[in-house]
Length: 412
Image 1 (cartoon, rainbow, N blue to C red):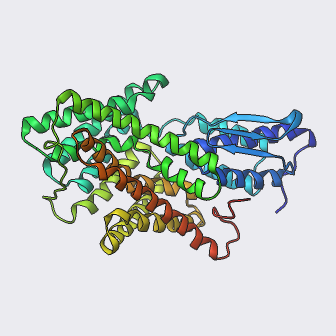
Image 2 (image 1 turned 90 degrees about the vertical axis):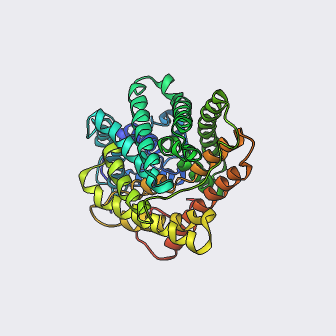
Image 3 (image 1 turned 45 degrees about the horizontal axis):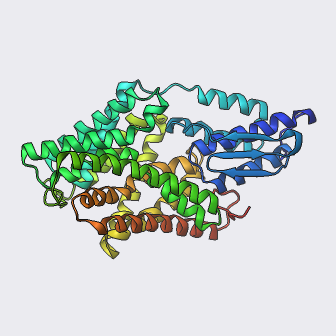
């Protein structure tokens, strides 16, 4: 396909567009291998092939007098990742000029949210209720998780315009939720249920995506990027751990009160209902385009079904392997269909549903009471199993010939 014709003196604009587009892709949590490959294709379309350096929080395009350096964009909202994916698709095919691409990036950054703020807060409550149905389907857990989810949504709304305070939100939320959960657990004699009640509202802050991408990038030779993402994910987990441990110590809880045991008083249908409720919560909280809802439901049920099937076949510790494998293949297949979002956009909901780090939070809470040391190891095994599922899914997909694919030789 012929590339977009632009005057030779527009090379500086083309380099600037490549840098800004790469920064936006990093802000949308694209793996660095995918960002680099996309920029190489786009620069070839413009006839401005130039050196590239792509890291999780930094990008450099070009050399000499026309070098453009950009830091990683602020994390994009989920609804903003849809037009970014469409822009990448157009640019890779030479269907948009660099100047128009820069204008489109400005438009994407200025996009208003689909729903008002109170809808997003309610979405937090609905998502938390969904995780309660999946992790601990009991009436007390469902009510408490919904209330704590709404509380976390309010805290996120209040701190939304203050970057400094927002960085402390995981610690603050973990402390408040843990303190209230265990205090109510004592008051209402909920006992061990309080431990699982504190997990659903905190899943919003879990670093499962960052840690899983770190494993994938490190295994494909991107050691610097993988190490950077891993440290970021572990830091986020440490913030949550600090909030939980502080609340536990303030309350003076004993290891007996921290005993964890799953319960299901609703029935085996409850987790499946939780997946559907989770889809509703994601729509309210993230505000994706209306046409994405059917694909969202499909991806979530396929991913969860694969996870349950794997758990039944080989055990729960590696259930994420089956979920990750099927999710990757499903996302790659949907990404090739007309009128469907980019592969990266389809992957994100499944990432969050797998929630491997919830096991780690339970283990950290138990460690504060002198027990539960094996749970952190289980968390790491869960994360590795999901990453392995993604890798094998990409390998299976790459076996078959595809004219254009999200998965190609990572060394490109």
